[in-house]
Length: 137
Image 1: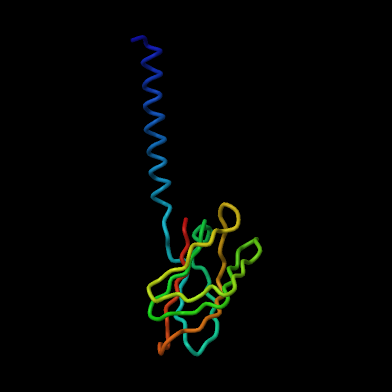
Image 2: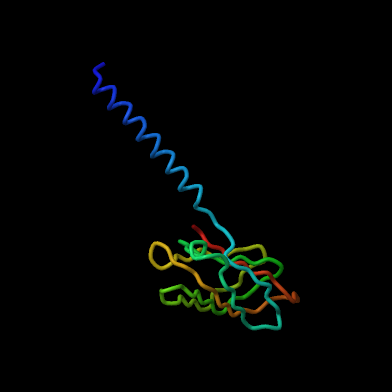
């Protein structure tokens, strides 16, 4: 085998290993995490939940809500984005305890979520429910 062919094959093997390694690292970072959470009270009609973390922690591709402790009817949901128009969703529906909403795409490829405002009603005899705002990065 000539030296040029051998060098080309070694370079190709290194490039392939680098590409496969970087693709694996990128997919490992893509996961759901908690942006913010709050205990909802039956006596309150709405709640504002601020995103925690710095600028980069708030930068997400998708957002969804998860609830624990009671079924919650969400009548109005507003996603407040940094430097983007707010997303308002009416009549989101009933979120069962232990359940999650369908993911909502961030505006653009990614968006920084500042906060979420939710109008709700806790169903049944429960007095509280825990609501989590989840982000996907």
